[in-house]
Amino acid sequence: MGHNQNLPQRRSIRLPDYDYAQHGAYFVTVVAHRHLCIFGNITDGCVILSDIGKIVEETWREIPKHFSNVTNEHVVIMPNHVHGVIVIDTYSVRARHASPIRGESKDYPHGVKPHSLGAIVGSFKSSVTKKIHKMRRFENRMIWHRNYYEHVIRDETDFQRVLDYIETNPQEWQTDPEYRLA
Image (cartoon, rainbow, N blue to C red):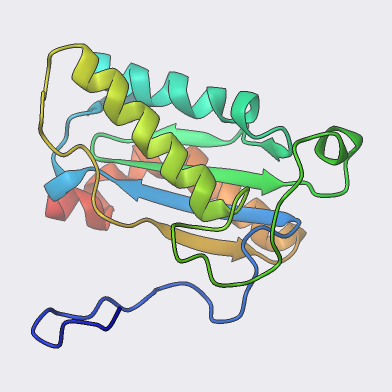
């Protein structure tokens, strides 16, 4: 099937030739559709979650139940975005007993590579959307921005910088680029 030349072509923001299913830590930012502040608000530097924000937080915490090789203890739900760290551990005993990753090809014409960062984030976003729509709030409305941002955490110094950013993000809300877009 060829590409329609009349449609705009989307370019990937991922690192070319990087395997996002491999062992590693990833800093992820997922943004609400149109940067709407539907997850809560900031009061005196503290996040006050809305009912929708509580669903986002609960669903984030459930990720390891669905991906046995993942840990994700570090997260902050902001009014219109989520920052979190996802660690994919392909070496653990728990991961070795998980369902096998089928296929070695880099090309997945029917979606993202199983157990990859894209599969994890996609599953998270889908689950949140379904739960919110079940509430009969925001029914049939988009919840998420189309994509997500990621940063491959390269070492302990980088990891600590990311954790500090997540921890202080609510106090820095008014200088956050997402605040200006809200």
